[in-house]
Image (cartoon, rainbow, N blue to C red; front, side, top):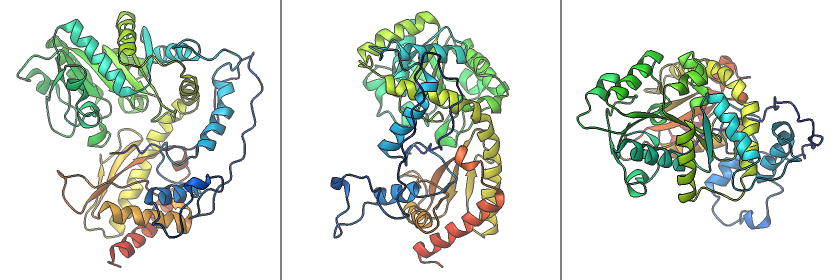
Length: 434
């Protein structure tokens, strides 16, 4: 399932460094008219009048022209806009009179320090991708435990989205304590019928609907892994927004695990990058493997600056997003019920974070066309992109992911109901059932 996390620009909250230059003005970026391509697009990207329209270009243009967006995410901005945003926020995030990083010093090292402090770990290492960070983490733990078997959920990111890299690249094998659409229980971990060196817990489990266990369930499953002489690694790409559900601080959550991975480009709206955090000796070993895996990049200052800005801007806002997600979810459920849909589902029933799934009884292409028309007609984007459930899923259904971020905070339940009615009118028109 493609990434869906788009959020709106917010004011940075960190103070400007004393030695830093004055904040640069944000260049004005023209917003195209609804249904028209951006005026600053190069000629090579212009659509031939006789050529079929690119659905992705049309969808992005409609999204870009929207003045009201319910579901956020990182897509929908031009390169010029991303550069302008970084130019505006960077002076508050880091001293721009410092030198650019070289192989991980400077601003990258500052970001690593910041993450270790936020998570309460001894150290943290910056990685260009989360896939690489977790490959390295699990390879390190396999060497330390002497067991190359990793226990994790079959819907977890390494199993779903990394093309079998754990075995193909790192020589690891995987086992599954459960196939239920939730994280494993302590009993399932204890009853796993073969030894394993590491237990990976994805917090939240995205493919199942961004679901989390309770705090008591999480601590119990960690204890069960310890009883099996296994280490625990948190796939915490979205760990930042888990604190409200657990009613615990980030250090209290991270303390349960032997290592933790976090992402910078999802909920924090960074450009790219991740961090692997844990004991100092483990992180030192991870840095050596990062070099071997090709992750020792010459310069990464744009990604590091964007990550620091995202920690300043978005991290304090996440509890508010999580709270409002419950309002949005309930409003969507009420609107679908009032519309008389024969079937629909929101997963989970009450969001555990600021993200959740919506399932509707129409093919994805019908829902995507209806959403694009709504954006073109009304400058309102309710949902981002719909997906068919794949070969294993029932035909005729589609799913989307809703990310409640800054753009959603102004939406009232009444406005959501009105937008859903308008969306479903277009769905029926596209499907030919109106």
